[in-house]
Image (cartoon, rainbow, N blue to C red; front, top):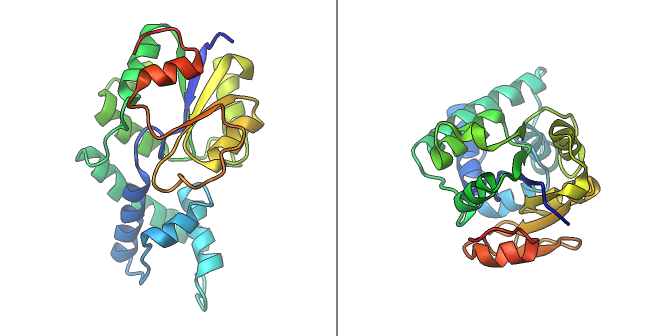
Length: 236
């Protein structure tokens, strides 16, 4: 197979963002005078659901007993998520969430070799921009031919919709692409779109089921190993 495009997930894949998200949710709860706190063990369970607004709703419906939702619950969730996003982008802007090992070099190598790059994520456009502006520079968008993120599609991972959206934007068949994911939800999403998928695990996902992945890595600190596994034909 000749790889024409690499499609990247963001959270947990490009950077170890999940604990930053967790801490930002907690800051938002405090700012909005809510007596909620998501510790690591609880957040591990909440990661079953993708999307920040969806995660808040899942927490309220499945983990809170005796909580009465406000009448304007959807607006309440949107506002709470917006506050969380502000705290999270501040963390990113302060350089507190760097790219994972090997990611910047992989993006630069692939871009230089003429391989198309794209993003397929459930995180918001603001989060993607804040992360990559710090990691790749203010002109980060020049690396990516398609930026599929946030609420562009209604059904989030593990649904394949975001990958179908990206493939359509690229004008490429799934067989010409590979995906890089970090979670079972992400893997199920990309595989359902017919894309060969490689996984880099992190603290929150290392015990998940990655059946169907082409290969699973701790990280990309040894890019030569990744290039050999994928068949990418440029040096690390």
